[in-house]
Length: 185
Image 1 (cartoon, rainbow, N blue to C red):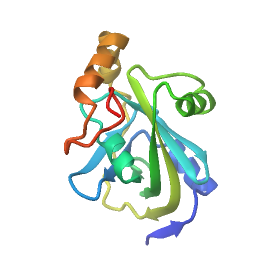
Image 2 (image 1 turned 180 degrees about the horizontal axis):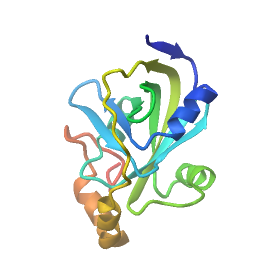
Image 3 (image 1 turned 180 degrees about the vertical axis):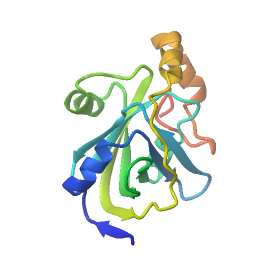
Image 4 (image 1 turned 60 degrees about the vertical axis):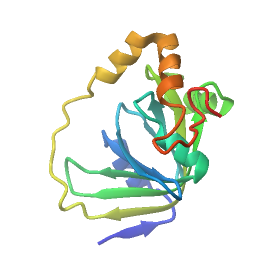
């Protein structure tokens, strides 16, 4: 039932455009594997072999550390509404911290210069394989909307508060690897 493709087809890009949540998995050669859910209309297809998401400040920064150390990244989406399907994007990722030229270019070209409050990086994935599978066991859910909690939290913190938070909580991964965010290089 699984099919593999070297790139995103127009049909798969249309599927992606309908999804409200995606999952990001990353790891280093040693240590913990990270798996994070994402939303907030953060995901963009750049071209058939490139995708990116606008990442916001959170309690950790595992993906950034893993990409610095290893680069492997998998993004998964699954249909919670409509026909069943799971889509995985495999490849190499890179963290583009807020304030860099690469971040600014992607933000301009793919997010119309609109930053989500608390934005800290754009994660870009260079896709080397796409895989679909049935998704028959994925339950049906109805999308009700985005939770305002993270945006409200980031707005209440303000720029200075977010900088301080990232310096305290986002400098290193759970395994002590530097993230390149929050002041750690």
